Amino acid sequence: MSLLELKNVSKIYGELHALDNVSLKVEKGEWVSIMGPSGSGKSTMMNIIGCMDKPTKGEVLLDGVDLAKQSKRNLTTIRRDKIGLIFQQFHLVNYLTAVENVMLAQYYHSMPDEKEALEALERVGLKDRAKHLPRQLSGGEQQRVCVARALINYPEIILADEPTGNLDEANEEIVVDLFRRLHEEGTTLIVVTHDPEVAEVAQRTLVLRSGKLAKETVNPNFTGKIRFS
Amino acid sequence: MSKQKMFFRMIIASLLRRRSRMLVALLSIAIGATILSGLVTIYYDVPRQMGAEFRNYGANMILTAADEAFTRSDAEQGVKMISSGDLVGYAPYRYENVRVRENPVVAAGTDFSGAKKTSPYWKIEGEWADASGELVIGANVAESFRLKEGEALTVSYTPESGEESGEVLVDLTKDFTITGILETGGSEEDYIYMSLDDLAELTGSEGTLDVCEVSVSGGADVLQGYVNKINSGSNAVRARLVKRVTASETTVLTKLQALVLLVTVVVLALTMICVATTMTAVVAERRREIGLRKAIGAPDGAILREFMGESMLLGLLGGILGAVLGFVFAQQVSIRVFSSAIRFRPMLVPVTILVSVAVTGLASLMPVRSATEVDPALVLKGE
Ligand SMILES: Nc1ncnc2c1ncn2[C@@H]1O[C@H](COP(=O)(O)OP(=O)(O)OP(=O)(O)O)[C@@H](O)[C@H]1O
Ligand SMILES: [Mg+2]
Image (cartoon, rainbow over all chains, first blue to last red; front, top):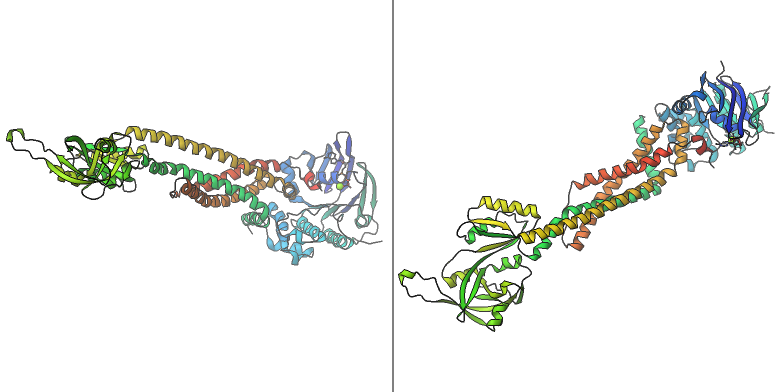
């Protein structure tokens, strides 16, 4: 059984089909990129997979559970237990330090553990910035805190919606490198991006157009390393 | 680290690291709590304050003889049952018929320092008498006999005849100096006033008192309490209230307290609205944070708890500040309006804090509850 399976999923806003009869499978441990022009439904799909939204039609099976049939409360629990979210904007609680922001995810998940949170920050190379507030961190550093927060509870799947959209090349490379290491550890990754270089590092790239799956390419020489042209 | 510890760590961080925002909220809560505790302090102190004020209008209790006669020491014993904090003053009176220039006049023996306290509205042209041989005469007496202050006056007294004994009755006389002329607008202007000792000397007997006027501060209940106490504790005197005075005082007091209560209620309502608006604003600007917390997996209940914990802590701090500042506020009002210090009421401290916490909590409940309904996907998409 695939970790994630979408069966004929549509999301309809009035006349607009933000997602139009999309079906796809993602295996455990896979690294998938999603591309497509603006408004093609990428975020809509990520929100549905990330338990923040429900499809109008179709089934979304995560670990065999149909997300489309869950209550809001159940969705919150599933999101907390199985999913790590990373956004384009570096969403951090602005009055909590880097380590406290990471601990927040532990707090809602199980038990806050400062030592473990510091280890997560060390993994993203921010050990010495642990006591800084978000406004004292650069954009790249903030996004790395978000990555640390997303991985702290060992989620089955990490969903990143344009995680490098606001980063320069150097920081982009750091974040992609973090994804590679997570992939090596067996984490399933779905990354939305506009950047072909970021998309290419994944094993598979899906392209959405007007809410439909338009193209699917498999990266034959997958290394997980970013190559700048 | 335990969940509880993290909970408080977050709340404290929010209060300390968002200081300027929190100060505004704290200020609005503290001002509300200050005015509330100040007004309630005044509300409770008004009877005491006004009681003292009312005593400018004369005695409100009268002691008379229980059966035939009562003496000075009977009166003193009765007065002793009133606690010294509530007793403003008392003045014993003994009335005798005397003659001035062969005309009958009523002489009153009293204690001038006591009369000054029980009848502060008496107007004396000249001086109050304070030594033996000094006399204060009513304005009507002064007019009839064309007397002025500073003049000498001889007062004579005819002892009651033991009719069968056939004694030759000799008039007793005493020389006085008039120190002042009394104007009250009442029957007091027909009398002449001297000390009890002088009257005893003039009449040749200690005699008995006719009445003792007492001025007590306190509400109708306090006064009635003393009346009952004296009546059950003394065989010689009977106490009663001057109904006309106490009844009108009670009316004024009730109206004044009702006014303060009304103002307090209005202020409390305004404070609640003010705190609610502030908390709504505080929560509104944190919708994104709430959305983020939900996205990370926070259930609504947890978010509600965190925000309520935060606002109740604010309420606690504001309440403590308000309890302290409220007393200062009441003290200032009291000194300005009643020119006397206010009585500190320890009970009002926990009450103020509790009300403050409850009001702040209630005021934040609605905005926080509506904020937990936000769709995290929508908020987080925001620019
Ligand atoms: N809540 C909503 N109500 C109505 N229409 C919506 C809503 N959310 C998204 N849409 C519409 O659905 C379509 C897909 O939106 P979506 O955010 O998924 O695009 P996207 O592929 O993520 O674009 P971008 O690359 O700009 O982020 C858009 O046309 C958008 O206007
Ligand atoms: Mg998008």
